[in-house]
Amino acid sequence: MVASRAARERKAAAQAGELARVRIEVGPQDQFVYKITCVECTGKGDRPWSVYRPGEDNGFMAGMDRWIFHLREKHPTSDAPCLEFLPAAEQRLHERRRQQAGGTGHADD
Image (tube, rainbow, N blue to C red; front, top):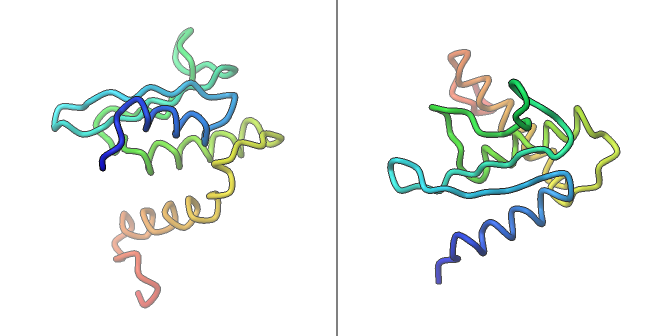
């Protein structure tokens, strides 16, 4: 059984913690686009800081990874449940950087 968009939104909001506002929209290719904003930080102008990046991966893992890094950097005392996934988020970031630098992201490169 596939979870509804509302159920996914509630789950993501619970994992992201009390500093987050979570919305899920449907993107141009019918994929879920996660928009997590911070209730305390501002981005451009008066808009809240957001994990959404136009033209980039805005799925659950990418959005939650950006949120985890935001919490670690800007709100280090936060105890959001998603922070338990910090080591995995750091590993994915390391692999992406290796791929962008020309490696495959595998340990045997």
